[in-house]
Image 1 (tube, rainbow, N blue to C red):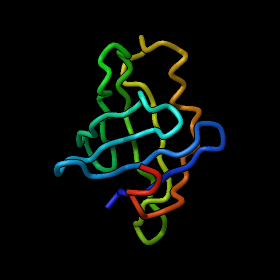
Image 2: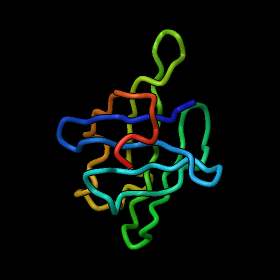
Image 3: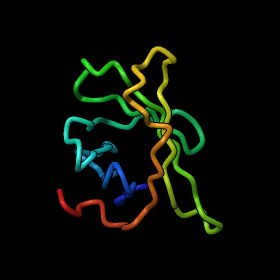
Image 4: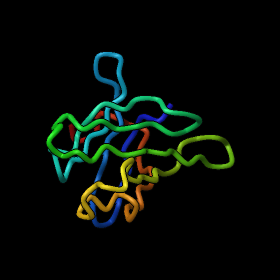
Length: 104
């Protein structure tokens, strides 16, 4: 349901796709920011980065439109100790495509 491409003017494109039956988050501009999405609750998932040295897992919350279709993503670090350079909360990721395979 959430698959597709989401865009932020500064961060670029993020692709939410299925890999081996699991949902994945992939930043195209920052390829090291990729990881599996784990369901948390409601429209919120946790992204666990493949690169575990980041120590910056984050909540990924999908916002829906009036038809309950995914429209955007809000993110925030799980831990208050996450380095400030992971400024996920500043991203404004808007859904631009329902195609999860674009640019991969």
